[in-house]
Image 1 (cartoon, rainbow, N blue to C red):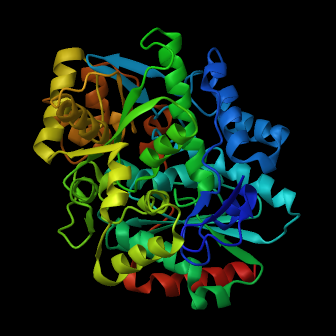
Image 2: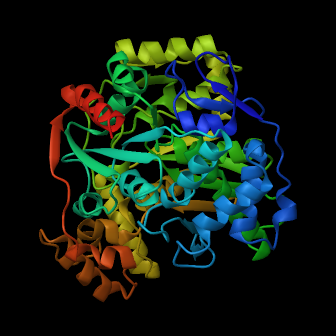
Length: 493
């Protein structure tokens, strides 16, 4: 299997080189040249998460070789998670939660960002490279800390995370600005996540930045990097296998997955799993007030020219969903020219409209729903009241989407992707379940723990006492100049 750009479909690369590059020089995203890499999921019953990960990663990245993949998987998943299952399931009335937040930063990004550094360093060894990889990462809250944690002090790498100054939770910000590692930097941007993401994408093709890079290669830890995306396919397989093992479903039964999504990476991984042979039923997009994806599925028009809402589910506060480009490419029949045209329209006018043939293909697999802030809070409250289960706001958005989907008469087994620990958003969760929340997020964590009896993850429990290391703030308009100066500095280190 090789990888080529959604905007040119020329000059395919082996997987390890696509991982190093992150983003194609033409601005496109790397996609596999073969979606027929059928993974025999029925042979994975009884296997550990690590064994399932090896099967999936070997299918998508055969150039690494079995032994290298085994080493990467072991390094990532053997000791970094607080449960041997890595991704446990929690049953509720109506389905199961796929708990993706048992890693070092208590968010689903850990499942990919604990292994990406190992995939990257292995790729460097394969090509005998000695240059520095400068990882540029935009975050709406969770990717940032997970990337900083994963890449801290990794040889031949330097990582900078950009986050919207007023667009993350207090705990998410504290996690980032207290990050350890001599090769990490954190920058607050006066703008929203889309501004941060645009900076990172522009840097990959900017002549100013390129001229500043000497023995430095720019890459990304966002889900635009195929090395971030493929590991997310694993937990769809592991979850399906666990449902068969526990008798929740019969072998071969379709399962619907409900995914809180902003940048479309997590749910696109589910689509890749389906293409690889997993019996995925519907993929349900769950959006908050920034419901650009829901509108697209319903109308065929993607329009980012709309009010931007800061919500209690900030990791989904996104108006430009980068990974949707990958789906558009396949829905167009792998027409790179058409995909590039749609992306150019989005950049120049703020919107585009996919044709009916593309939308028919997309709607075969996807449904979409959204909820407002009140609905989100009610989901948190009602679940805790009725079943003593505590969930974060992003998971609550997905639970609302499931309820809306069920109202249409759908009864197949459903899994809701639970993407973050409720303690990462303790103030809002505490308020939703009827507790008194003040301005201190750590007081809220303690109060929420007392009410729920749910253990506080170790990484969050120690966070309050950690010293803050980073306080840089830049306007979004100065992003490229800042990055160029940073690359110049790395070039002379």
